[in-house]
Amino acid sequence: MMLSLFHDSTDSGAPAPGARRASKVKLSKAARTAVLALPLLASACTTRSELGYATLANEVPATRAIIVPPPGGPSIVAVLQRNFQNGVSQEIALSTASLTPGQNAFYVSLATGSTPQSEIDDVLSLPPLAQDRLQKEMDERLPGIEMLTSLVYVQNKYGPFGFATGRSASGDVCLYAWQRIEPNEPAVFVPGGTISVRLRLCDAAATQEQLLRSMYGFTISAYYMSGSWNPYGSPPPVPAQLGAIDAPIYPLGMNGTAGTSVVRERRIRVESTPASGLVDKDTVLPSSPRPAAPAPQAPAASPETGYPVVPPPSTSQ
Image 1 (cartoon, rainbow, N blue to C red):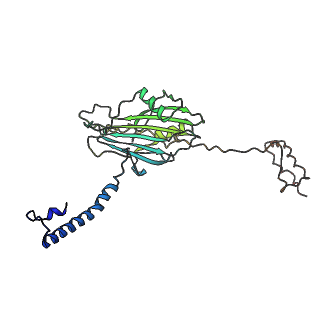
Image 2 (cartoon, rainbow, N blue to C red):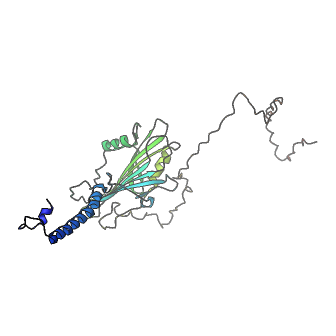
């Protein structure tokens, strides 16, 4: 049927020699085209698509962490970052030394203050602090631990913050702290922006005061270069006693007040000697009696005033 396409329609007999050669040439070109197209079709069927990920968070180096823990505090293990149209959020994983399930971490978000309109979910929303929202966060990040919110007013160098403490089933002390940093004035004609901070911290050998040290000593090392972003507000005025007469300023701890630094306690486990009195037979002969404990000596009488002190007699012969 294919050969008839190249025959002369006016000739019903055998094809001419020239027509036969032309059909062979056209057949050979079509065959070569089909052979060349086979690898392309095979590759199109076996080519894999690019691998995609369902998460929008990416890991960044520890040097790009928005929050830096205090010196001597928990070290940064990893930083997961997600970018939004109006800000950025990070989960800063910290070193964990506890038996409580979960990861110690700082959760921080920086918002520019503006809320752009977007059809996709890439807008950072930081709602105001509320007790029910904080309780939901603690239930997710500290499951099964009864956390008690402190009623004591506390603040660090960025302003006031709140915290709750609890004890896990394994005996670890856990802390959950929250802070929202934003200007006190309405952000209409003044620079705005918001910083949201959360801290989840559990430790097997730390006290509540030692855990709070991380909330007092952290530093926010990231910022936006825009002049309209300033969640800290105006800088505080210089203290009135600075440079004044009769207003001494002492180094930390010299004016009678207690220092703010906390020294971490180290618990040393001391194994007691078994009461059975077993000894090593390779080091002590079985027939050797156990050495008796030395008798307690009576305290020496204090010498009278004005008389020389006589040395005790020598026991050497």
